[in-house]
Image 1 (cartoon, helix red, strand yellow):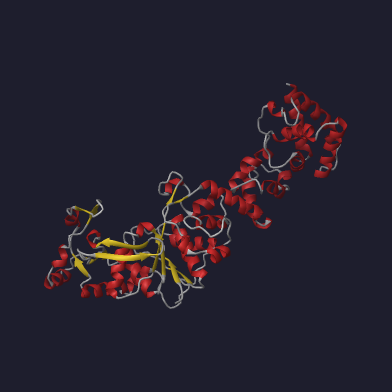
Image 2 (cartoon, helix red, strand yellow; image 1 turned 90 degrees about the horizontal axis):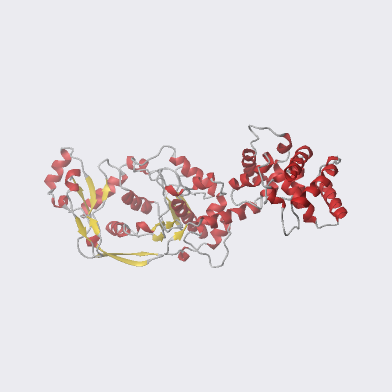
Length: 492
């Protein structure tokens, strides 16, 4: 049987990393076996519907490379692929009425006031659960018809037996048995005529011939109700794959307040989409090898859903930053420049303070930081000194390892200044020759000359490049100005 998986998001805003993980695992399961990956939009919860959220779904899937084989824009005979469009055909009501005829569901006319009076019931594991009391299950056929004829609002509820158990099998958690007494008669059709998420899911998964269903383990408690629906219709259940919870470093559920709970959050923070996909793939799944960097094609080849863990997956920002840095290092220069240059221009204030020398050196600056950043916003703190020399303490000129101090540094800068002033060619080889000539003249180690020069032209202890690169980028005029400034500070 051909593998068919589906990603069925609700258009309620940005795509949470947990939802993206679900989409990714569904995609990998299908593609690993040469199957089909379907996109279905579940928009039946009209209260939570967000305008423009469908566009976010499409954009996110495109940026992550999760190309669907079927969906609203690719009908392969199983459509419509948007649940609100399926509602219009009366599809879900038709199946709900079939369940009523089988005694597996019933009309419920209870109003909100009555429902609010229902008391909680103690479950078998000691937890309180609120259950509907089956009040409307006992209405006569005549009472039901009279209520319907009078236009009385209703919902349709699933009829769960009060005795016995329900058993289902999950690929990760194994066989699970639940007492029916703990299951509520969930609503299948709401008072507005729309199906609930739980009911529409089962109908659509069956009609679209879905073979594997991936979702978070918070849905484990609802799965017995799905099992009973499949059994009531006489349908084969798909393979259930419930994934572990994603938590923050404090082992709390990852929330919007974390600032990095959605794919768009991460992209806005300077992460690369390929790195995000790679990282999310490892949130709950482990490959056979110790490999951590995977392309999407490599994930397709390696992914085995039986290696998904039961334990909560920790969203380790330190690891994501490291992984993102590895992707930036491996990025081809054309793409890297495209992504890095806007951050560089912003860091150097080039929009408000034009600087022809720096404008002509943008790719050189980008090359300096490529292997030194983990996310693109890191660029700013590493290159801000190019725009303006920061205030710095002359104590920086003292470096025991370089065997230099303020007095030695002053003499180096004073001796180097006229040599650079006389220089016409201000390329790296020419700058390096001046420095090495000075090293030879002073009969000292390279650092005795290079440390004071780099300090003077950068005002920083750590820079993405040495004195040669920095001075070439700054240009002759600005380099000399900063060296003179260093001499002045050291004399004071």
